[in-house]
Length: 257
Ligand code: 13P
Image (cartoon, rainbow, N blue to C red; front, side):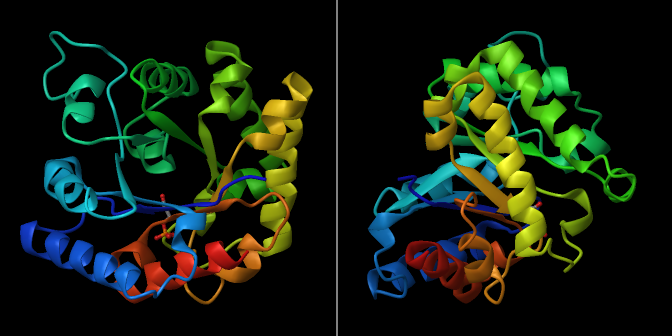
């Protein structure tokens, strides 16, 4: 039985005041039972890293976990502008989103760098959330499964299948991110099953236990039908994670799935 995970990726949004308000809203909602059986799921928020400490201090009084949206693959040294895992752990980071499509497409991150980052996270005791997903052109060309398979295989080759005893995978079709156009539950399930089959080829037990999240325009209205799919173990949520009621509704859908 896999424990569902609902993760909010706040992206480059918020300020000191709004971040506090969002955390206060989530925590009072959770305290007042807005998410029945909230202890049966893992809840994670990934603020902009400048607010990590602020968010982690609040989250420490709740069931909410804190993570970051990007990490350096390097341990320390002359890497101007980068943040090491040790620094992030110092400030309360437990999870790290790795290889988000925005980092791949806007900042040129390669599959190899993404694999290095996964390995660095695991070495630091941080759970990587490996993002994979195809572009619209790749889907239209019938390449979705091949693209996603390659992205997962690169990490298995670099880190070993045992990495997925810990690591989480997030399937985020690029065409569904921030577009309001969600993959249908059937489309998402097809890719999730394919990802699990790739893991299964390497180790059946690991494959059965690895959490695979769906991301891409997840909202309060579509979360339940997505999470009802056999191989969907929660969500990586962008826009809707900035709204207290929507995020709590998505958490409720995961807890009920
Ligand atoms: P949206 O939920 O805004 O589509 O963003 C998805 C995403 O990129 C989460 O990492």
